[in-house]
Image 1 (tube, rainbow, N blue to C red):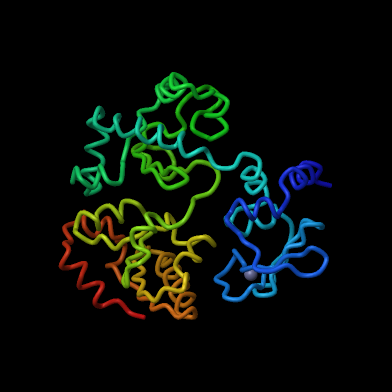
Image 2 (cartoon, helix red, strand yellow):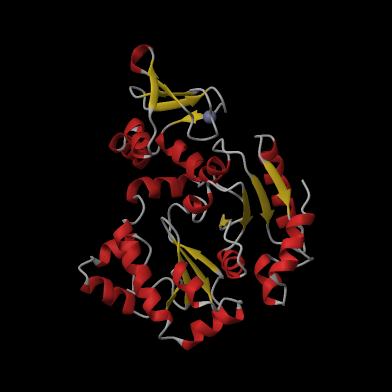
Amino acid sequence: MWPAANALKQQIPLLDYLQSQDWKPARRISHGRLMGLCPLHPDHQPSFLVDPGKNLFYCYGCGRGGDVIRFVELYYDVRFGEAMALLRHGTPPGSLLKDVASFYQVQLHRHAEAVAYLQQRGIQQPQVIEELAIGYAPGGRCLRQWLTSLGYLLGDLQQAGLVNAAGYDTFSHRVVFPLGANLYGRSMGQAAPHRFLPGVKGGLYGWERVSTLREIVLVEGMFDLAVLWQAGFRNVTCALSNHLNALQLRQLCDGVTRRVYVAFDSDANGSGQQAAQRLSSYLSQRQLTAMCVELPDGFDPNSFFVSGGDANQFQRLLERARQ
Ligand SMILES: [Zn+2]
């Protein structure tokens, strides 16, 4: 029924894929099957069964199972088609993302309108702009020209989602934040506000920096994180959404005792608040202390600072946060 899916499953055996994601079997059982920790949820005793012969998995903990495509759907929280694309192309190589980010970084300082946009969003400290490696995509074909001059093939740039069929930069007129395995572009104009490259969004932003801290603040967006950094709150991480993917949940529930302040947007329709509540009850069930930070109606951490809020006021919001 799905010849392309079947071909892909044969091309990328489940066990190979799991091992490329750092999964290690804890023990071998009958018929060549393997048991290990489940990568789909915080697991403390091996409940994840892999049958390399049948190319299938099943977890006795969370009750989920299937083939490699199903695994990718669950692991990255994507739909079937996206999971197929991910398996087919993988994520763009790190070296390519690095070259793109440095190109955008240089462009930022050449485009006064981009610097002005950052200022309008409350981001002005050169040190923070530098540390977050914030850049600007001026558009046109200059990204493609630069990357092909470095030796990249146009086809690879298109496959990575950086350049469209006509050779134009897909992030045109966006302020760009490099993430670990992706890019986030915020439109400065009429285009859809948020853009990522196809594929994985990755884990929580800068997780290595904060994972050992006893108290962390979790925000939805990179602009929230940037203003908090500027205000001196360095224990911040960002999910790039108010819906955490499986990898991000695993990071938060890694067994370390910590208090998580969830500072999502205070949306008019209550969606940010509901997401924060859902997440905090999920975390509380897993022995973490989760606190919901209540921002004034209609504000997110970014607009809170842009409209004159300061570090002391934000600190008071943290102190007033409720479990
Ligand atoms: Zn499981």
